[in-house]
Length: 219
Figure 1 (cartoon, rainbow, N blue to C red):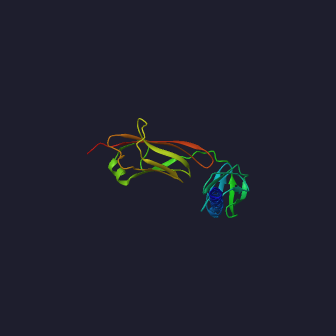
Figure 2 (figure 1 turned 90 degrees about the vertical axis):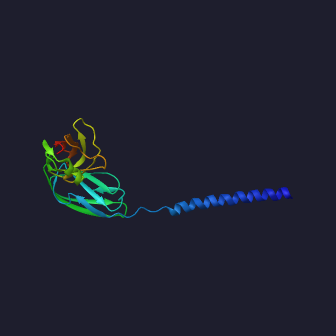
Figure 3 (figure 1 turned 45 degrees about the vertical axis):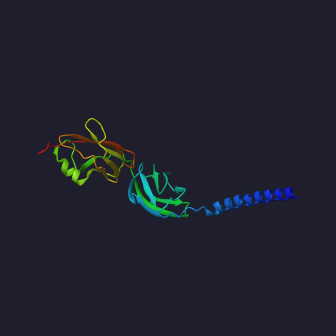
């Protein structure tokens, strides 16, 4: 009788454990959160002229899921998508749709001839070939800026004349590139530095960046 009772207790314990496992599994499914609805935030360019070989960068407030467009090729992930041509010259009404939230948005452009002109450096904190640059002033500001003739993407870095990275943080956004000082990586006197990098415009035209400057001696 005792043996039968022990067998029954073991079977009951096993069934109870199995019910807990099954119950927990069902709870996991219930706890899964649905993807948040996404809404259109911005586009660059937002309107106006668009080169037939250009591209449009679209930003959402949340991940939009699958994105489609009535013209062009969509790529990217997260909150940002890129819609690249070729687009047909003339008036363009571009409708974008996305799955997370089931939204849509329409952008209008005037599609122009292909853009074959590469972006250029138009200015910045230092000019190419500049000498007697005050390092204390630059270190005090904590940044070096470089400007371009149009919106670009890419990267820039601050290097020594020998090609060693100085360790500043480089960022390219819109028409501006910025190098930000990292503490302990200040530039020194009587040294030649080069801002190096590569940027491209929305049509894929690339430019090699090379801006050389030399700091002045200690006073």
